[in-house]
Image 1 (cartoon, rainbow, N blue to C red):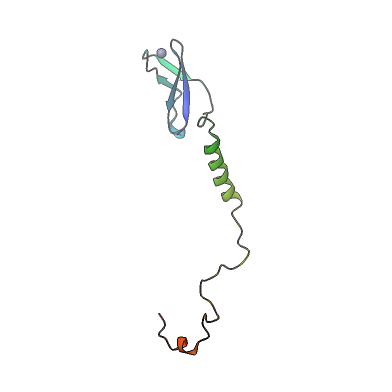
Image 2: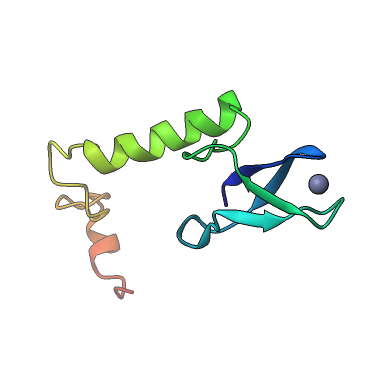
Length: 94
Ligand SMILES: [Zn+2]
């Protein structure tokens, strides 16, 4: 969930976490119980972790351009018998 910054005129900034769809325009200041108004219109998502953004970018990339399959994947069964020994052909098949 994104972190939103609210500014109290007495105490300064306080950070609150809300779901993006339920972000109030003002909150009760945790220090003075006054009103703290939303300081930024857009949420700052995360702290800018390189690893986290790398994962997000990679996830978005697979959604936009998924890896293309250029040939039919192997079924795992060989069309040619593995052994040419005729006695092996008489063995019961699993
Ligand atoms: Zn306050």
